[in-house]
Image (tube, rainbow, N blue to C red; front, side, top):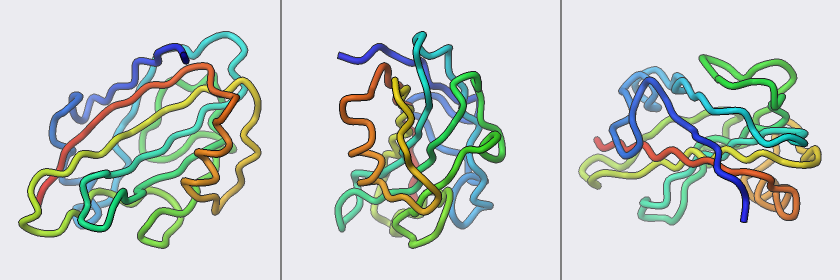
Length: 150
């Protein structure tokens, strides 16, 4: 079982509403994310954000890889040489919450993984690529759940 990373945000608490400025229509700003030091031996951090509550199944909002394990925070953009993959809006990078109007509250799972080996992921990778890349390499994981509705 992987160790626990404490993933949090000054923008919203676990289970609380993601700010409008981080929604797709409200500015599409990546929410600030912070975490504790990953376990010794971490080679890379990767992030996946998805919404399991859509009428069409799980919707991928963000795939990010190549994050230096020395980083403890993301604010505004990815640090250093990190790369972003494709989201289900068929765009590269972060795609904020945009649930169908009147569809109720959706949950957005921000998952941070600490990997013992580099993922090998490059710009344009998919969520499935990330999910395959973490198998057998995961040292620790943290999850922060935000909500949003229109």
